[in-house]
Length: 265
Length: 265
Image (tube, each protein chain N blue to C red):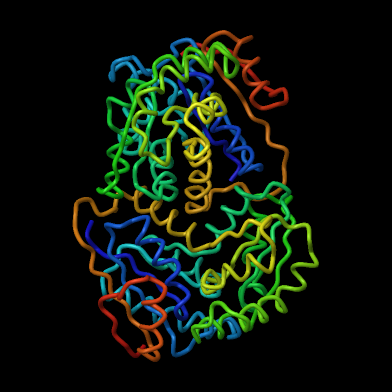
């Protein structure tokens, strides 16, 4: 069916999910909405995150999306169950796909999770992992400096290396993990630096890549994949600065993205 | 919820799916039914495969399964849509998960598929792949000697090597593929030999492993994962020879499986 897939995030991080969706489902059209004006969501109280997320969701429902992807771990942690109950289209968050992929990958069942304060405090990953396998050992760590750095377009270089290395120090001390979940969709933009700091022997799971795969599972299950040939027209919306949003988008997608509009929620 | 997951196969091949389900979902209980008496399904006409599959499905429905896994590619190719329409529990086959994983993995979009005559002639993989991405190039090959060999317990050694090498010769000639789907749940038992014959640079996708992951997605989506702590009691049923079934099961699971019963359909 030719309705678009809606993707929401607190900012630009969800583009990591959008890019992977475009690669794995090249026929599907996306509407992306990043609440860049009010980013980051990580340090905000739950009721604020819930309110902001609903505002984004309503904007996309008005555009007739066939599925909603919550491409933000904080918003997933606080709103997934509610949105699944309330909406009559399939809703998927980024936490369960990341947890499942980590369980498929880990050999020693010691899994690390990094994310925003909100995500880590919610214990959403720990619960998702232990729900599937109660014997998993989880080591989690909030990394507050990462999102503001990424939203400024800093992914690599000495400053990124310094911040990542210092922040991840406690996770490196916990040297039993064999798998690390990037529990924030901004973090894949720092993936090379994180891999360098943590070491090559750690397998990094990008929740976003895994979410793209699960979107395909759910759309296929509901028989709502688009069938046919077309050049999809994606739409990007942001609530904050247009230039920075466009710069990061073009860098991340390695080609100019077409439609961008700044909106007010 | 504490109802079991039902797994059906034409023989022992579905154990590759069952093993991965046990690893990824260690809390869930399985009922496995292998129609070893009438195996292989691959060369049988469609109406016969449909009839036999329904007999297996009815046996498992009587045992109150919460989800059905068709761990047989031939049966998936011929019955998935019908079973999804008719049953009121989730139904998953092995073809779509394999196709999705191959699309996630392949870089050059040239994908090889090997399977039984029935699966290959049905073009089920080609359709599944092209449904998601019409630009995929598919190279498929039926490998009739593989299933009888596996059902006799021959996985490795010179005879296996000779048969695999000879059968896969046309696929090796088609040297553009970077990803090969094992489109039959028996074939993972030959995986080492297949990898050796095809070369290390080819990524092999086991539809079974991917199916286990998608079972987790669907159960989670329907909120029907078992929640709690228990030592699951799996049940294995076969229609043919008990000793051979038990021998292959014990070898494959690397530990004695508990309950085995021979039944008549």
